[in-house]
Image 1: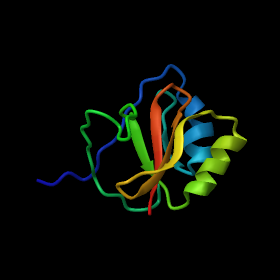
Image 2 (image 1 turned 90 degrees about the horizontal axis):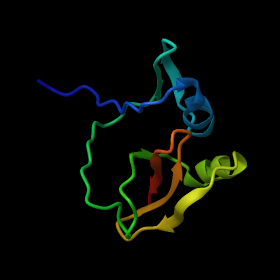
Image 3 (image 1 turned 120 degrees about the vertical axis):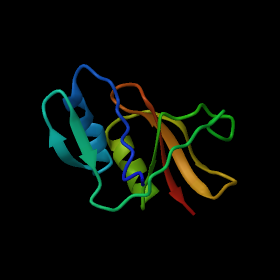
Image 4 (image 1 turned 45 degrees about the vertical axis):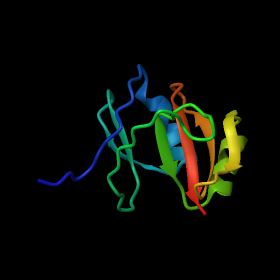
Length: 116
């Protein structure tokens, strides 16, 4: 048996609120919409990962999600243009990533990062 994918399920009373953040800012496509559930996906193949952490590194809280992007400065511009407050960073971390934290529309802490 092989794990094919892992899906993060975020509880909310209004799934459509995710569009502005996950589609418009992060650029994920709306892959499924049943009204009560919306799934956003990347057209790129992704590696399956599960992280279990005591802290988020550099003394930060453990984020609910980590999203690796290919252009952190563009992600940062989109976040700022949308008026979303940064919770941490941007910071160049000693383990080789540049990242920042924001909260999605549901209050989840999201770590947006790019490997150096």
